[in-house]
Length: 244
Image (cartoon, rainbow, N blue to C red; front, top):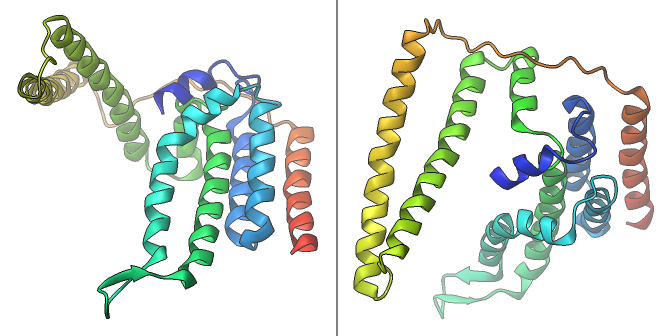
């Protein structure tokens, strides 16, 4: 996710209003969920992938790195549909579950590509402050922003600790690896509490009143982009229903 947020800072859609990109991405997500899985999922997935590789100018390797971890969850969620529990034998292959499993995997993959489309074009710092205008409580957006920031600080700390351990030949055997991983977990755990405590003290010293005010750039909505997005989603729906 951190890589996607850094990537979103450099894409051609970086300066577009987040609402425009949300309309396109969420419209395609809705199509992936609501339309028949065949041919809806392949059509939506192909359109999202074309947008990622075309207007956003991502390389195939960047797209692959963005989707490979979530795809593990897609596979894990689809595999149970291929087995049945009960009877003799207790766990057996269920051929009738192949269709639902493929449909679930297709829908999930298409929706995943649509969400990557939004994440790879919209930094979190652009999206979170604008959620308050949609009625999301400020406390929710502020906690999300702080957790997001602290998460990657802790990942950076874990990487630094691991590099130090590797430099001291801490991963030579299974025993030393186990000791280093335990030490790394302890260091990150203690560091998390220390950073949270210092953050709380810093906010209190600055007179925190329950709201973190940030300046948000005013960006007008592009009517041609909104119209083109709605037309694209409508075309996807039309093509899918015609081919179904």
